[in-house]
Amino acid sequence: MDDLRSWLTQRVASYLGKDPSEISPSVSLAAYGLDSVYAFAVCGDIEDHFDLSIDPTVAWDCETIDALADHVSTLVEQR
Image (tube, rainbow, N blue to C red; front, side, top):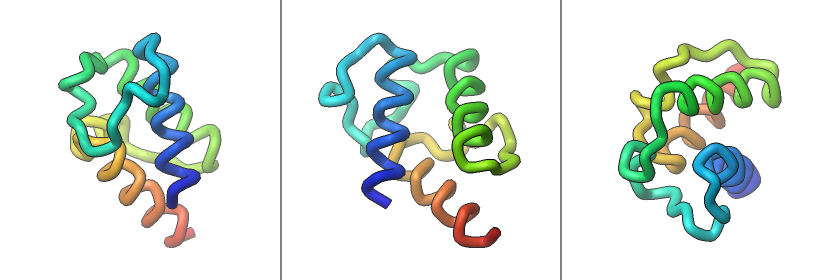
């Protein structure tokens, strides 16, 4: 799960133009200014990387990287 959290942190940081160390997995993605375009891009990255089909609103439903990592982990386990 830590690998997943780290991977998601790196993706979000990349889209925000920040260093991953500046991103806390427990802070709301909206607080960092992640807009809908980048949220959809993160969802696309998740689909591509994990070969999953997810709802594009999952980045808003799971407001933090921690919550998103938990959700994706559950989906991967259910396959």
